[in-house]
Amino acid sequence: MAGTKKRLVPGMEERRVKSMLAVYVGLGANALLAILKASIGIIGCSPALLADGINSTSDVAYGIVVTVFLKLSGKPADHEHPYGHDQLESIAAVVVGAFVITTAIAIFWNTINHVYELLTTTSDYSGASIWAFWVALFAIVLKFCLTGWTYVIGRQTKNKAVIALAHDHRNDIFASLAAAVGIFFGRMGAPWVDPLAGTVVSLIIFHTGIDIIRSSTEDLMATLPGKQLASDIKLLLRPLSEVKAVEEVHAHRFGPYLVVNLTIGIDGGLTVSQGDDIATEVEFALLENIEFMRRVYVHYHPVCLDQDSAGDNVIA
Image (cartoon, rainbow, N blue to C red; front, side):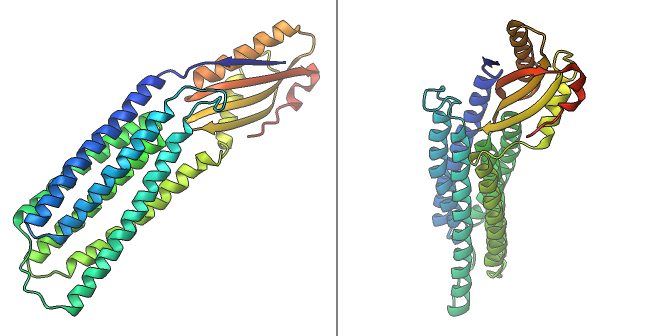
């Protein structure tokens, strides 16, 4: 027999509200910075700040895409998606990762073109406006605060897309820092510093993009949780004397949530009704004590009392 109980995870609505707030705030900040950087970059004759402004413009574009995905992930379960639409969060994170990698490649090629121009042309360029430098510093401070705040929300909600956004905000710090360094040394008469800083930043951003995609695709490929989860389940069920054996644990992720199929052994002399009560008790024990546990399916069958210690084989 199998006992099943469907339950909404506590704080799901609060989790969605916090996640969407992080996305909206990030989208608003990127829109502000895109306008500010691009306009001052043109007016202040700063190619570095203008390029950073284009980067912020791309942030706005994928921010809109992520907003759509996160809204769709909040749709309730249906017949085609019995576990809900939470994996769209991982898809949104993959989108962020792809944009991050694209940004890294764009910055790298921009630095290559800059080096080529320095080597093949002669310019009387005396440096960008001081306003361009101050805008770059403002972007660094804003993104520093936004990175920390978004990381906190990402850890609280365990939302892959929000964590990916936090990584991208951190990358924007490096991009704006490279622009600020380039502007500063360009005003000092050393324009070669700009492409050097840009190259280093592009490599850092590229590595971050790869990490984001790798982490997100683990969820999309239904990577099984580790042995630690199986150990936690055994530990939680140990006080339940009616559970004579924990034989199999098969756990799957759906977005940040977990669904577990569990096989336990109980006293063969119990009635079906008593077995169902034990299964329900097992379900509540896991649902109440394991964070982001969405559903638990329990299968139970009789075991001999003298085999209690033999049936402790857990598979995760």
